Length: 205
Image 1 (spheres, rainbow, N blue to C red):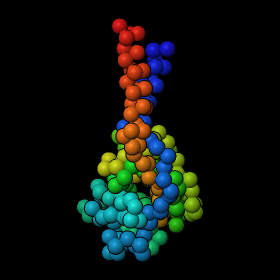
Image 2 (image 1 turned 90 degrees about the vertical axis):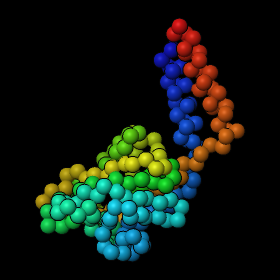
Image 3 (image 1 turned 180 degrees about the vertical axis):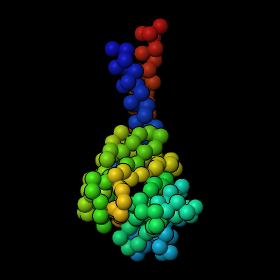
Image 4 (image 1 turned 90 degrees about the horizontal axis):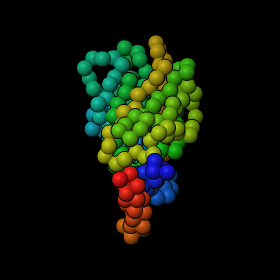
């Protein structure tokens, strides 16, 4: 009983802190050189951004497959390159941060030459499920244990299973904003959280 009360209080407090209201309409953030000015040079560089006007994704800590000390990776009109060829600057991993609290609902693989490959995104508040690189098309994104990508937090996207001459390209993410709860609406939930937490503490005493 005490454990249940504690979990309820914690869940309510987290919901208030994250602003876990219903997401807004989906928007699409493209990762190709046709749509993003920062990609016009054909490379994903540290500090580059991709935006749809409603949400901005900022990239950093780019690890390329060629390991030549250049902290950048290839991008073209099909999206961001991922692979392990040492003679190409394909991304092995990179960090990304969102300008708003979001969930990713879908993604697009515009080119692939891989077998059983996938990618995951991990951060301080969880890790996504395994999302396929193994065929082209639009797919539902598996959020895994991440409840929401928090604005300003750093998350690392890495590929798995790409070997030899295999490569794949991510062209876009579909995201939904997680809107903050207005303060008056948040107060009852916060009161319930603190009340349950106080009851839990009294029963433990």
